[in-house]
Length: 123
Image (tube, rainbow, N blue to C red):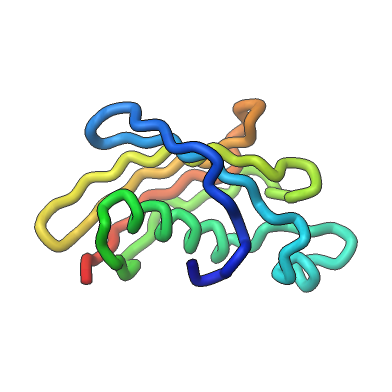
């Protein structure tokens, strides 16, 4: 984990051969929130992308490097004091040395907070 203690995986559900749903809990007391932003913590987008990468790495059991990320849309602010638990719906397709993902991150009430597609290179 690059950002140690940033989140905890609560549950992983295998939906089908290419899809998983992972419930995580953000650590609202993590130092990253002291600077982003004091008194009104908002989860940095780069931290969410790193989280998606780490969860994908665990699923494919390989170190990954981000090649491209596209169609990234943050549709809601992720404040860990309000919505600490997130559900990441990940479609993962492995092809030789690449891993392609489609992600939808939601709050537990179903509100979409983030959508993106990405391609990773296996190490």
